[in-house]
Length: 283
Image (cartoon, rainbow, N blue to C red; front, side, top):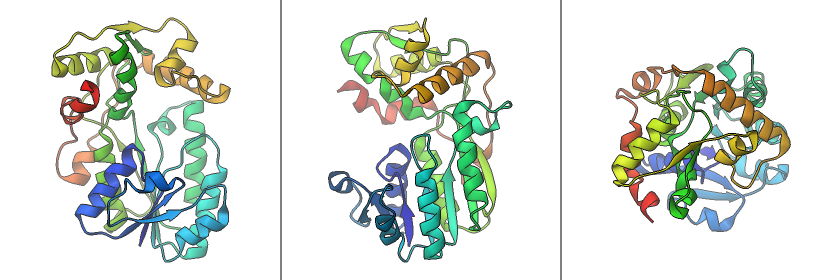
């Protein structure tokens, strides 16, 4: 039995779809019964809360592999899951980390992912660490501005990165959860193209056949608002500002061939992702 955390998020939703299509039984740890209703029929919903270790232990019963995706910047939830996994006899963990851990010196955005990686490495259970860069699905955060007619905020100007489709991350995760050969390995996952935010907006504009306004941010507060329109806690806000400053300085943008090597096909382009999600932008 596989246990998924983050099963209703951008990566998790894709992973549940893949596992369901491959007739692989899995359990999803969910806090909200309403969100559990969105899972595929094959999914076994385990209602629980990461702040409630007993509920995590119940969800972990009979589990042999764990998909570990924990939001936020703390470590307590990761510790809770790893302790429960150890007690349950879990034999494989796939952790979603971040490409930020590869930056030297380590930025704040990478520090808590680095700490989670260390917890997983030292827990005694075979692991695979996935380090994606920016997600293509972050473009969905542009929808309120598109609907209001306001400009999209560009926090990184000439900076480039290779955004990745969460579905590609999920497919890599599914392989690492269900196939041998990935124990104690780390994979840096990117999309196929290094793009600026402006170039991404141009792609979306072409696909939607509409003019989309864009404006570079002028203050740290606007940089935070580009990702969190309603604000973010101070520690997270500072990490976001630092991360965008680093991105602005990177005018090349790292790309890897890891997705193609693992899946036997190239990763999906941003244009293909936009086409697949056109309805979300048009409604």
